[in-house]
Figure 1 (tube, rainbow, N blue to C red):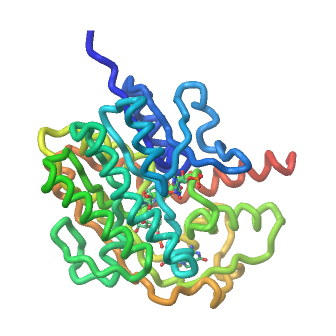
Figure 2: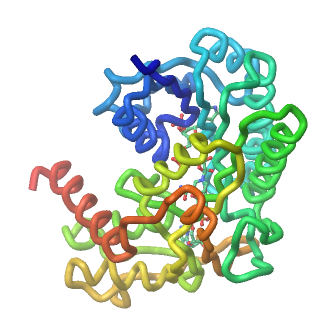
Figure 3: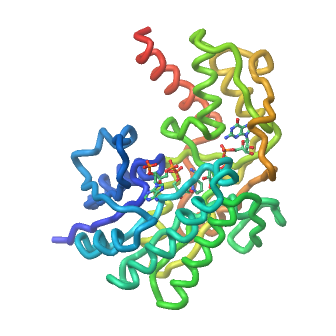
Length: 326
Ligand code: NAP
Ligand code: GDD
């Protein structure tokens, strides 16, 4: 009988962590999720699978906690999804962001090196590393030019992953994922802010939606499609780095247009531009070339941009109606 594989996910309470845990459970894995101690529990995204996963306490700030978890559970694969992931916050908390999003990667890689360097490792790298893009579309060989403390921290996380692979012959992969969204996205990210705002306006709970730069363009995919690529990377013969993207880009304005349109409204009547949401340095355009992932992994996105917008608006309408007993 085949041995059941065990995976450790850091960041299991986040958007991607919840989808990846579902995916790995479906694949027959035993899933260990690392959660950080807080005064209130935050299991909203994983409550439907909470009895199927093992939750353990640890923190990317604390290498000892990581070593203990690895020693106790001996996973075959580690998916490092934990991070301070909100770009805007990285300007107000640059040191904290560097500690978690950059040095946190070294802590977990080093814990793996100490406990068992045969454990396979996935690092959640980001298209934010391309920043002020020097090539269109962006692929694995495109040079990085990060535009935020978050982007800078992710560049560190990417290179330390490559470095541990080359220094210690570890099976370490960096997935350079372009923006991916869902109804589980945090409310501060622009897509969820829009879908939630649209639903509130449609139900008469708000009169306007205040946003920053409407012209920024992103390559937006569906998070559920992207977590599969993480697993595919760790189940190849050789470790490598891959861009994961749809190859299509849309502006924030276009997202607004479609989302309001979905409920029969015109975004121009409700969206107000607000300086508070503009960034000190912007990433104007991201569009990825995922040819390597398609040809090597056999990965391709399954959800279109239009489907993504519709599913997010529908979900927020449903959630708000439930909360309002409508
Ligand atoms: P998310 O929803 O913000 O989730 C982040 C997770 O990290 C949460 O579970 C959070 O725990 C955990 N965390 C934060 N600090 C931690 C610490 N010190 N120790 C342990 N856990 C900690 O992010 P996401 O959208 O799922 O993204 C997952 C990863 O992919 C992140 O590394 C992100 O930077 C990267 N990424 C995301 C995208 C995207 O478009 N979503 C694209 C490229 C790369 P709490 O619940 O306790 O806060
Ligand atoms: N959050 C937010 N709020 N963004 C806004 C707003 C607003 O009110 N108005 C306009 N935007 C613009 C931002 O300036 C940015 O250009 C774009 O919308 C997307 O912003 P976010 O949704 O916050 O995502 P992000 O692209 O900065 O970062 C996300 O994607 C990265 C991958 O490229 C995060 O998930 C990162 O963790 C991830 O690495």
